Length: 600
View (cartoon, helix red, strand yellow):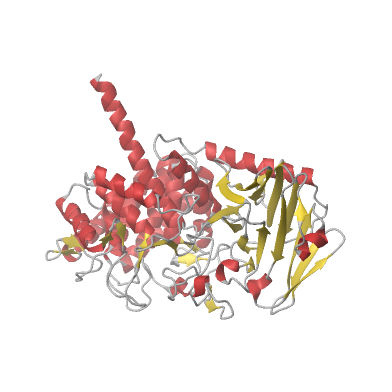
């Protein structure tokens, strides 16, 4: 079964996906949201790829170099053994800043014997919209397209260029490389230079990972998830992407296919909170600057999402010439959801601002701007919290009074009050406290359904929704409070399917949901843990980890029946929630150790 068996490499400028057999099937250059160079992921025949072809006698295994984003694909046939070390260069420059060129490097390491392979080099620029022509030049191989838009990429290699392009057999007797870059190089690379790039990139990731705390339980999963979240951050502006891909379907053959190569305020803020908790201060600092740069006017209302370079208009188009992943059309670029109104984003953003100020109040560069944003957010919430919206799941039809949106409006005001205390700005406290209490009463009066014995998806509804489980995480209600416990029980009964969760079961714009939303399953596991069902929650957690791909990576969704991964990949939502769950179990373990020590 195909289980999105890909590894991600990247350098906080762009990313690439490489299959478990070493095929480069997805890459956009020069940046995450640029048009694709390789898109076999979205069309087997038209999309384009860079494949490593070996005879059937070879065994292929894949892993990451521990605590790095260097992907190793191991090919062996008896004594004939070689490895490909795939990476996108990233390391600190001597003068400061980072070297992150728009390049993919494939370093071929000779291990033993006389291994041989062929390369299928088939770039299809600009989403394969026009013909891509490839020419062998003296120092490089150039591929270009004259379709609707002119574009070109360059390949440098230590192998015979004609043999590579023509797919002839190459026998590996010593280390070699292939570099695919968006720009022509001023100096032609050498094997030694490329090896140095590999080592520098490896050291960068080892240094970055060393800042992540070590946990007794699930340390490998936490480390890999943290690196994955870092790979989805865009260095230049501080934006954080929801995922590295577009149009991987929530269900095979259906039309729930979206472009996730953008920065959702909600997703990104949740990522920053988790990454900040792990001690990666720079990612959080850059993101807060991204927010400051988005809101130059005090009356500026936040969109729910932006382009990674702060673009506000993300016009949605379909690429009808591409077949889609496993035939799942349409393939979309851009995302019409940018026009939606979702009131929860203010609370999620305020939570991050509060967390960062609480941690680093003496070391925040833009404290005055953040205080200005805080006041602006409370003003917007006070004027709009009573309005209906599209909600966290981006219903494209009617607006509703979603419980999650109301709770996050409460969070916005609650965190603003806390920020005011930190900054000793108390003049608005009385007014803000009254607003916070008003929103809280409104939620208890209208979101609680006596018949269902739970907080429901929206005011006056009987439908359940996994997002209300976050009421406890955001401090709206205590885990042991009867209303929350009964909500968890009701959601378990209605939305859990063999330990995997539906977001909701009611019909939306595209019919009835038919796959499990992975972040919701993590929320559910967390909630079970919080209400005291620790054994059951850990059992579900271990089972869920078993549904990851061969490298421990998750997409957005999981098929209830086959347990295959679905949706855009790798998904920031899934990995941030994995980290939160894993840390909970680790904390419990350390508490038990303290109690055991006291008993002695």
